[in-house]
Structure formats: C-alpha cells, structure tokens
Length: 207
Image (cartoon, rainbow, N blue to C red; front, side, top):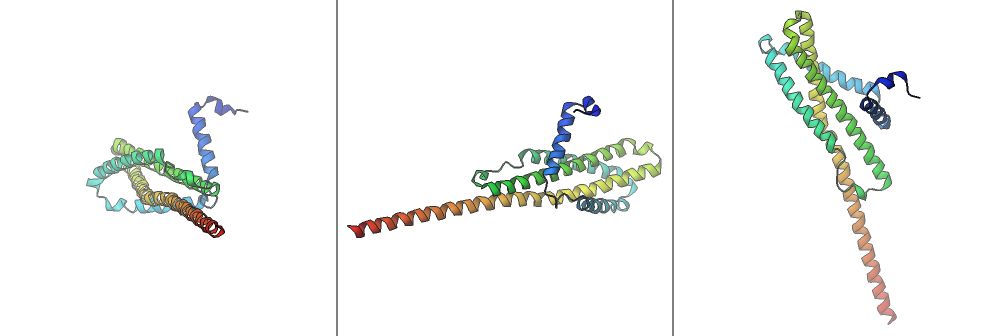
C-alpha cells in the first residue's frame, strides 16, 4: 500500500530512493558497516579542518573559489565514471560464481562513487554559500561556514585519492579473470591436440 508521503513525491524521487535502498542492501555486509564509513568520513573532515588556520584572511575568498572550481570539475568526472562503470569487455567469459563476484565489485564501486559525488556536491554548495553570503553573515557564523568548506574539501580530496585504487581493484579483477579464462582455453586446446595426436598414433599401430 502506498504511504501518504509517497503519494505526493515525484516518481523520479521514489525511484531514486528505491534504487538507493536496493544498492545499499546489495553491498557486502562487512564493507557496509556504518562505523567504518563514519571513521573514514571523520578522517577526511578532520584533515580538511586542519587547513583552516593555514589560510590567511586575505586569501580565503580565492581559496574557496578554487575549492568550488576543483570540486565542480571532479564532480563532473565522477558522474562520467559512474556512466561507464561495469562496461568492461571480456566479462562474458566469466563463470556464474565469477560473474556474481564481478557484479558485487561493480555495485560497491558504484556506491563509493555515488558517496563521493554527494561529498563533492556538498562541498560545492557550502562554497557557494560562503562566497555568496559569507560577507553578510556575522563573523562567527562565517568562520564556521569556512571551516565546513575546508572540512568537506579535505573529505573530497580523500575520496579522490581512494577512487583510482578502487577503479584499479575493479579493473584488475576483470583482467585477471579474463587471463584465467584464456589460460583455461589454451589448456583445453592443448589437451584436445594431445588427444588427437594420441589417437593418430594408436591408429597407425593398429595398421
């Protein structure tokens, strides 16, 4: 039965919520433990917060503009990466067990990229807020907003550092399985050739 709030939400919102629940539920339990995600987020936020006293007041505006530009570009890159994740040639040679493992890796990579994209969007939003309203806000509020920009920027950079290695893990799995499949084909071809040669030798002996 459709809940009352669902009746008033756009269809694409409901589909997005369902997709998010489905993707999160499909991730391996060990990888999806919340405290591990929170620990990773805390490390990135603390590292970014450490940048705050290093930025002089005179350079704060230029710093936030640079953060805004960089995270905006990276958000576009991650969006493009999301579109092509899982599109690797050679997966048709995988066995059912290997295919399940492959799908699990792809889903985890997609989840990680989606989280990274949301971190970028949050950083961009905070940067826009500071650039647009920081000067009009009370100094303590503006300082807190600047701290949040630095914190989310640090988390964004941590996510960027992790992303290439996650992609490598995924690509390496695909390439390794492809190589193993080719080795099995080569072994099978050699076995058939040896069987054919042995059959010819036995036929000659019978003559």
